[in-house]
Length: 447
Image (cartoon, rainbow, N blue to C red; front, side, top):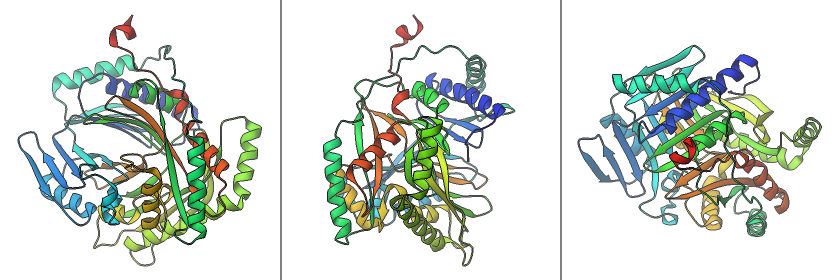
């Protein structure tokens, strides 16, 4: 976990946050992915190779040629094949896999347009990393490295912030959301599925500075992972509460299902009461147990026989403005399978979709009425050493084509009450909404 509790770790996180945000804001490259893991903050900049998977084709661009081919079958197998044949084994991969990636796996492509991007991965030109021991840069030319180091030295010095945050009406759309929750509960009682995670979007009324929002929001959050990215015009900054799937170099598979939520950060007394309520609420416990059982079965499907285990069960994990019931499921990946097989088995996260997954995803498309894109998908990193991580893209602000928005959902089960589920979405939005920094022209920022 990345939850920071001691003084040196706090100081390092604030310093690394400032540096990574400054690199992203500098304009040194058009495409980048910032990824925080275990006190390592990576800035993967530029792109040597780009892989874009849509519902109809896969596009590979290495800067010299651009190839587009149609595909069918499993999107995970398609990505695995393209990476094996078009990406050097020594290369690092970063990018994202959208929620709609699962539409192909479940035979639900009719819900999304053929042009919908399901995944976007890049091999970056360089990687700059901030650790507690300093800054390291790999793959950058001399000029780029000099600029990165100069920015890091400047950003390393804290300065007072004059950022004014954007006000957002989180209650907008409350009536419609309560209505779809009621309808979903009726479908659950009719036996169509057992759980579904329904989300709602909240429009942000002004343009948002995504790197500045990341800097401010990360300072106030305690995520499992955090990320900041810009790829082909899509920008996002997120404070992820959990991993969808990870495969370590020793072939350990990890899933971290979270389900069960209460507000956090209100006051010491109210936080304690909310925690006690969370730990004893039968609806939240039942929802969490269902999620852990599903994650266990999915890990077991790709793990060597007898290696799957729940290594941490139903512990309260604090994530910014909310606290969750969280568990960890692990196993040893079968010798005949690879990391993309593990992702295919665990994706989308049970805590962002529902169960059974195909029926839940179908309900999500019917009720939400649009593709989700990156929201509740995953930010993916693959290292040459064999580490694979897909971190859940929740608690995230998005910006694309002049539009900025937030999105949050709640797990609906038979015992759900529409008002409580709506309030839960507001509590989750509270991890990002208070820290939205409006975009200002450069001249205004330096005046």
